[in-house]
Amino acid sequence: MPPRGGRWLAHGSFVAALWIGLGLAVPEPVQAQAKALPAFTATVTDGVFAPARLVVPAGERVKIILKNEGPGPLEFENDDMRIEKIVAAGAGSFVVLPPLKPGTYEFIDEFNIATGVLVIEAQ
Image 1: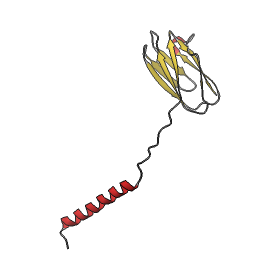
Image 2 (image 1 turned 135 degrees about the horizontal axis):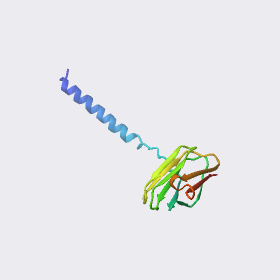
Image 3 (image 1 turned 90 degrees about the horizontal axis):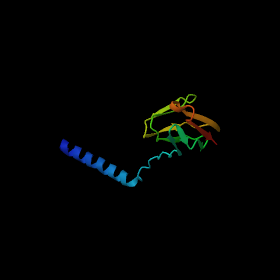
Image 4 (image 1 turned 120 degrees about the vertical axis):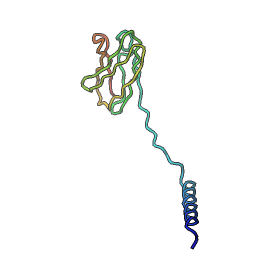
């Protein structure tokens, strides 16, 4: 009977060879790549969105990129969807919208209710 240490060495060599052999025989793992979200940009200057209307695909999550070029903060929100995002002056951020049914959705700048309206149309 070989010494105990020799048995472990033989077993370890076998396992290492097995793993190396399997590693060479199995193709490189394929990583699932997340589908990039369609992205749309709205710039806010002095409480006014440009563009004032975005057309997005219905039934898909979309990313709305917000750029605040005004002197004050922006509070982007839609109460029905429970979405609210505050963006500091001179800063940018984004929100991801859930899949929308075809229709129009109104978002406002809470700090500029009279002029800060962005309509998102899902088609």
